[in-house]
Image 1 (cartoon, each protein chain N blue to C red):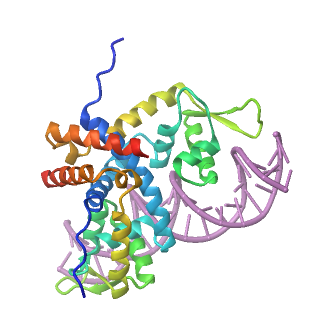
Image 2: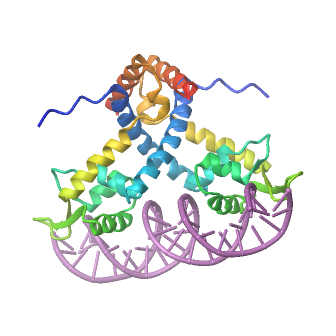
Image 3: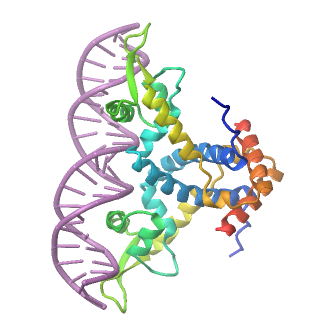
Length: 143
Length: 143
DNA sequence: TATTGTTATACTCTATAACTATA
DNA sequence: TATAGTTATAGAGTATAACAATA
């Protein structure tokens, strides 16, 4: 029976990362429900491009979910007048998802909400916040 | 029409944090489904203490959800023999949630899975990984 | 009366499989 | 034949409200 190896720095970082993330997700989820949006709807809104219409399948890819889910999510967004299914020139099978004016506005609110730093991050001194930002920037670039 | 203020470091860090987190959640969710666990079930398993039995209400608090949800989540865990509802001495209204041996084992697997660093973090140089861990440690302590 | 946990209900989200209309 | 999107179905997760047993 040997002692377990100490967890790597990345491993331990991920545990903390996860803990902060779960708490924040719950908080953001509640705020989104207050806007009448489910989490998936909000995420979809965030993924849609205000400039460039997007096929349903492309949205499914960005949401990491099956195409059949997107039908329902877009149904609900469309029912609220946030998104429109427009015809796509060139291939009549494809629906071009287009944000309405109201959609663009609510999208900005959603992004604002989801970018609100969790209490743990907000409480950090500015030096740490900047260091955190720089490290995460590098991490995302490395993908 | 004035230019928007540049986002604070914490704000920008949170955006990156969120992006990495969403991708990782999808990946972890798939792996958990492979173990026959929903995300909430896995999270519940993680929150239960192998040493100390816990009332349903305490679990609801840790999951940030209504007590009525916990009934269903624990039903499913109990059906798989991972958790037991035991009597609590002193207040017969309370159920003492106790992990079975199988529950303790699967809990360890789940924690391992959820602590697996996302590709973005894994790709960072060791210095950055350590710095990230240290900053997040400070952040969690500040709560 | 108040609290713990459950039930009933309704909605969102999810995956799978079968279907349609285009290509 | 293959692809884009939908429908049908079944299950998990969520919140609200009403309820039973116990305190």
